[in-house]
Image (cartoon, rainbow, N blue to C red):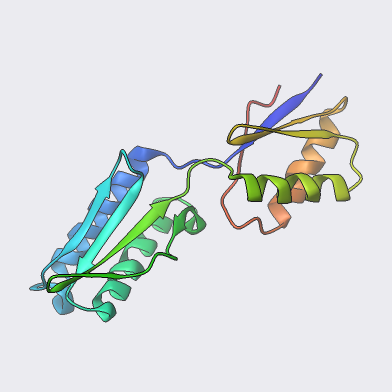
Length: 162
């Protein structure tokens, strides 16, 4: 029976390249050249730490990072900018999470979207991915087209088409 998996993941090497490129741009920008702080990628925690002297510069760091991430081909919705800024000494720090896997809430929303479409497929949540099965490959392709048209709040990839 044909099937595919819906996942949401970011290639760690591509993300590291984007952060390194953003750091280089940070070093060459005239308005940010002699500021304290910067950006660091935590691979294990899957987060990016931004630090600077004030909130305005944190916003500039976010813009630089987002531009570099998109330029590297990573969907901008993979980064979660909702965290609050934390004052730490004379610096302001902000932690940006990199979304990995389809979370439960988004998974329910995706499955509901698939069921409401009345396409003859079966979707089930498996850990941090969704498995979609059907008797026809055409129905699976219709589900992929449907999900690409809808806004799910996070980037989706369709893998393991069998």
